[in-house]
Structure formats: C-alpha cells, structure tokens
Image 1 (cartoon, rainbow, N blue to C red):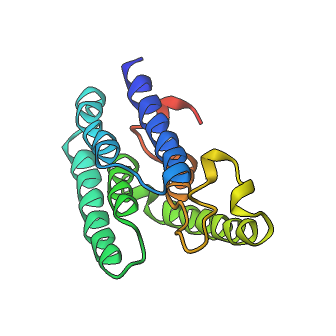
Image 2 (image 1 turned 45 degrees about the horizontal axis):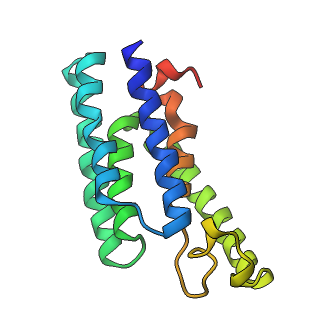
Length: 165
C-alpha cells in the first residue's frame, strides 16, 4: 500500500510538472527536488536491495551529468535538465532506452504541435494556461515529453510497478 502511494505521488508530480511547464515554461527547483528526494523514502520502503538501489542511483547520476552537458549547450532548459535525472532515479537502468525513445518522440510531436499552433492560432486567442507556450520565440514545454516518457516507462521500474499501469 505504501509503495503504491509513493509511486502515485511520483506520477502525480510528473503530471504536475508537465502542466506547470505548459503554463509557465518553467519547472521549479522545488518540484524537481520533490521528484528526486521522494526516491529516498520510496527505496527504503520498497527495500529492493543494494544492487538495484545502486543501479538506480548510478542511472540518475549519469542522467544528471548528460543533462547538465545538454543544458550548457542549450538543448534543454534548466528545469528539464533537472527533471530528467530525478525521473531516471525512479525508472532505473532497465528503462533508459525506452524512456529516451518515448521522450524524444513525444518531444518531437509536441514541438510540431506547438509550431503549428503558433502559426494557426493568434497568441491572444490562446487559452490562459497556454499563453506563455504560444508566444513566438518561446521554447517548448519539454516537461510534457519527460512526463510522458516517465509514465509510459513506469512498468519497467520495480518502484513504480505497484501502480499496475
């Protein structure tokens, strides 16, 4: 039951981050910290063993290093670069490639949708929650793609399997 609660909160935080990114084009440090630090009590409760815990930590660290590198070169925004390692802590090594694939495809579809929407819908006619996203010259809310990858790959993680998705 407790494992289900941790997994549910993780998914809820990912969805919330996606929605906030869509609305403001930012994912706050506090939200990213919550995603990452929630991993600690979840792994203590789930007690998957040191091998699996270490593998998840290593996956998160590698994701952090790569994300910082991509942030420095302007590929990701700072919030995105911090959300990815937090998500990878939860997903672990078994989900790395599927997560990257789903995140990339979702990000590409999202980018196409945003580009088309910016050309077809005047920014003043955009709904309030998408006002920032619809402004020409602004970025794409990539937190949506990250959350999509996290939710799609949740069954691959022993920490998220209690959700049954």
